[in-house]
Length: 174
Image (cartoon, rainbow, N blue to C red):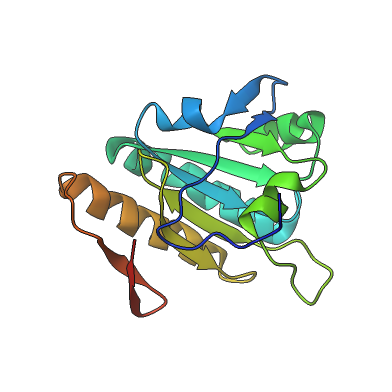
């Protein structure tokens, strides 16, 4: 499979990765309960990643009420994820993308060519990317943007419209 960036409107191919408990988790399983906020982050227990994870934790009930699951992904192993999740009382799954294969499939860019990127995807219940937010430094904005989008998906019944909410100030078509 080539390393191409997913765009708004693209369907996400199924994947399976281990979570912090070593349990294999698939996209299909995650979407069974509604939409998915899948956020890629550089490393467990670093200042920016901790701030982002704790903000997702603090808003977790809002995401759940809006019908969305939140899942974090980094290249850290399951044991590192378990320590990170326990230390910060994270109520959501962290997936181990140890070889970076899922990161490449999504096309998550590196910052300055070195640091793993920080990108959040909102994926609807049918597996289509509805929103992408990419910022290494604006960790709170990842949560705010995702929650705004999830709420808008919840408030609109499924339609055949091809219009999706704005991304980076531009309307996108699926």
